[in-house]
Image 1 (cartoon, rainbow, N blue to C red):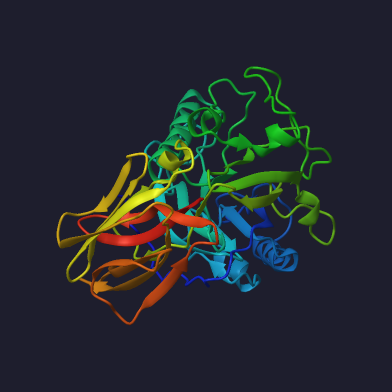
Image 2: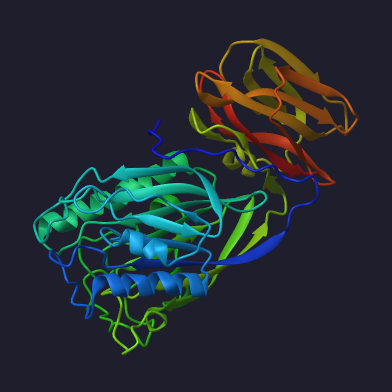
Length: 440
């Protein structure tokens, strides 16, 4: 389990009305050139504080849905003072203490983490001077629409040691996705310092190992990236064309419960110019529009509970089962909810949590579904956990375990849907729980 380095908050309650079935949002990736001027001018004219203030003002004016910034170091306070996004990560510090990675968002999130690269290189520049790495957060776009978002700033330079370190960086993010984002929709965007044309760079890793799509490759290059070893597709800044390749990239994938599609891609440098027409950063920001649609056969609820324990998600397994239906559900509990377990009519069983408490089982009859639940959370050893859960069937029968608290929410499947699995976090008890719904 990775350490959590962010103050947590309570997950939002969801209304019992049907969730919004589709929507749109946009994302921006921007290296804001926030290294102290004495260390790096970034070859950008003008005063860095003034330029950073202008970037923040433009963030507020354009109101992008989700922004990842890199090199947000010593001018961070100025950036935030001029922006008005409601959700923003706290800085990890300037040089040499911080990683320069931050997020500004119109969406809330949980499980924010910062992870330092396991490998860095100073062969071309001082990449080991700061704890560069990547961040992870689970973003709530809408009810039942959660997307794992990664921000990264990989090792720079073209020396052999740099290329080796950079490849290790991307593999480190890919490994995290495989472990902690299994079954989930994912966005990866940031300053990769990678090019498809450069021998030794591996921007294909997210496609080959994580089933993700590079938006530039999809929408600009007709699905075929430039060949490794071919001539670099050099861009101006700002660029007048998207046919060239920059190191700032965006990958995405949906899930069995969410269709996610990139609908437009652009280099947005012309949206970020000084009054005299000069650029505000040495990087051209990348702007992508997305549309999303809830799944036709599987969907997920908002989860409830705390940020402790290990991740679990039944969604991937359920995607391989045709028309999954619940046959029985077992809850174990005493003072708190210890275990959730559900068996499908096809025989598969999903179990999460520990072995304590008393078990209670509800066996369903033909045509009976699990349609709603009440979940209560509380504090134990200063950690938020699920204390109680009651699940109700379409016949009005119930199963429950644990101890009720005053902090409870309701979850309800849409008409014609039923609970067929879980997603959340657990250890020796259930720390967080949400539901996977299957269409009958």
